[in-house]
Structures are given as C-alpha cells and as structure tokens.
Length: 167
Image 1: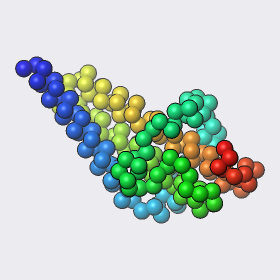
Image 2: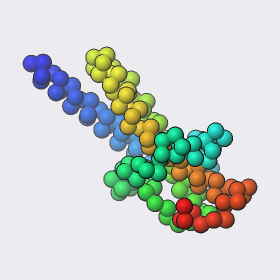
Image 3: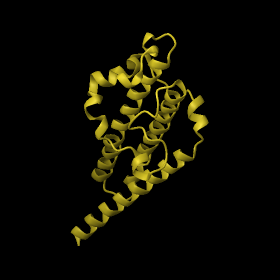
Image 4: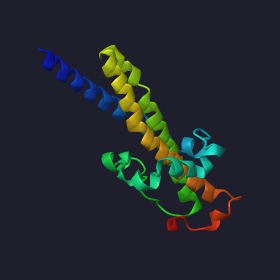
C-alpha cells in the first residue's frame, strides 16, 4: 500500500511539473516578440560584466551546449542554440528571445510551493530544489548570452565592430 502511494505521488508530481512547464512555455510564446524587443525587463547589471561573470563563476561555455533548447523540442519558437545571423537586427532579436527564455524559466520556478499541497514536507522541499536546480542553469545561460550580445551591440564597446561568429 505504501509503495503504491509513493509511486502515485511521484507520478502526480511528474504530471504536475509537465503541465506547469508546458503551460508556462506556451503562455510565454504567446507574448508578442515586440514586447521583448523593447523591454528593459531582465536587464543586466554592471556586476555581471556583460555576462562574463557567469563564465568566471560557472564556466558556462563548457556546459551550455548540453542544455536542451525548448524551441528544438517543440519545434516552435526561436532556437537559441546558435545565432541566426550576425547583423544588428539578428543580434537584437536573439537578445530579445533570451529575455523570453529567461522569463519562462523564472516563471517555471513559481509553482514549486504548490507541491506542498499534496506532498509531505520533505517532498515539497525536494520539488523546490528541483525547480531551482532545473531552471537556474537556463537562466544563467540566457544572461550570459545576452550580456555578450549586448556588449557587441553597444556603440561604446570596441568589440561591436567584431564579427560575433568568431567568438
């Protein structure tokens, strides 16, 4: 009986996470691209050093390519595995889509406390840990990539004249 309850609980948790991840992803995809192009939301801070802090702290370049891009899984949205060009508009669009992806992953953390409603305390804590461990790497990669792109787009930055594909 106890084994059945535990396995049923885990199936409920998996189904709930699947629902939340898909629903939040779809809702974020419905937000017009123009919002993310003009948005100052999720701005980068000076301490992030145009994304370089994430490379220094977490060596993002070594592992970012193993993360799954939701656009490739669902075949909708803007793929962020590689640049779609190196013109200013291409880079601005890529930066905007990193904002969308970051918003998606921040919002995907929010349902975690709901898991306390049907789980014992320890499992609710485990669900919060899952939400953080699963989403933070994606958030870090989006901030890292956007920092690099915005540094290239910045007219004050001498790197803006370099071809981003050579980095």
